[in-house]
Image (cartoon, rainbow, N blue to C red):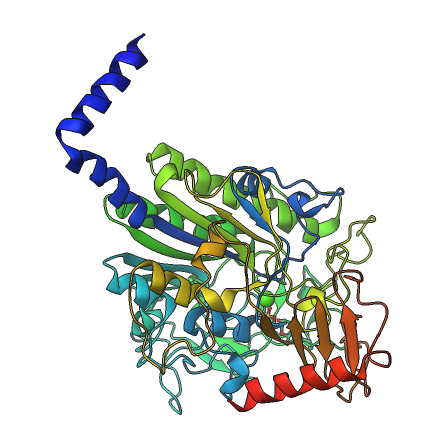
Length: 509
Ligand code: NG6
Ligand code: CA
């Protein structure tokens, strides 16, 4: 009865003051947006995508209350290029220096062009980046001085606030940076970093393997400076009190993400929440160790799921859930042994990180770039819906620019397409064509996938992942052969020719 009275009053009020109704509509024009970006999470790593050996109830909730994409992609099979494309809307291979970066690399995104966060800034949003960065810091040709504010980082490309680590969990320096400054750094213990030679006198994984709590797999590297009992790529000295504890990273990041949400709960915000999980070294907190039965990799998936749960809870507590669009995805496909003895292979227990796909991280086969992709936006995106449209993370920038009625210049986001209607389930028509960057290049058009010939090993020696390389052209019919098992290039030379020409053209554009 009470509800009824309220409803009637609401209708009456809305008739008398249409602006009230409008206020509600306007809100839908400016939802908060959170991109939760997992690291190395495979197409088959979530129960929402069919995993049965592991359960991810919080991420699954996004699927239940939103839309699940079956054909969503990163541009590339590794981190830095995928993130470059997400931020800029430009295919990363158009620009040199966009491959996996060391921890002391300079910023690779031009501050001149529009970026995903700058589109939000222009629309009046507060923007924040929390988590893994891996897009470089500081100016080209200048050695980063970690002991003073680091000019040119997330702030230079559209983020009002940032709390990041520079590169990857397995690369030095193993510190957090909040708004350009290393957190917890003491002037008396300055940081120095080198990727060329050993500096300082701290033990390395190579010389002192007995000090390691997580052993490096043979030949993989990960045997330079030891931090927190884990050998890293690269050498560092100093900053002892500023160094992270791997077991705390997920907690630290989610705390900062929650703080950002809370601080901006009264205005629209955009949060790029870039998780460390499930990249190596997989060293989740005690809460999750041993909980998945699938080794540390599985435990890291549980931690990732918990993180998503914390964010959903926070939005609910603050009353923001209804007006927040959450997008969940991953930066590239899965890998098992990525350089540490973490049980990923030996304790796999029948789990299948790539789902029905072939390949994995950095592969030209589908598992390299086809990733989980979920969108929840209450009241707009239909709960429990699914889309098979071909979409790519590179399209987010043009899509949001269009949503905000912003015009991007010719130089901005050249490869990004406005798929806002697709991302919100209003249209089923995705991209016609997508270039995928794995071991070699591929082009997807409709249900055809062409992988251009390339020389090199068919299997990555270190990780055991199939690269997708072949000296002959490959052509797969993804609709009937999602596992890319039957190469039809010989049967359809005309399609090979057409797709090869299309790929060449896009790459020369
Ligand atoms: C590779 C590392 C791998 C991982 C990757 C980056 C070796 C042998 N392998 O160089 O462990 O760090 O870089 O991953 O060192 S990514 O997801 O950030 O692209
Ligand atoms: Ca990655």
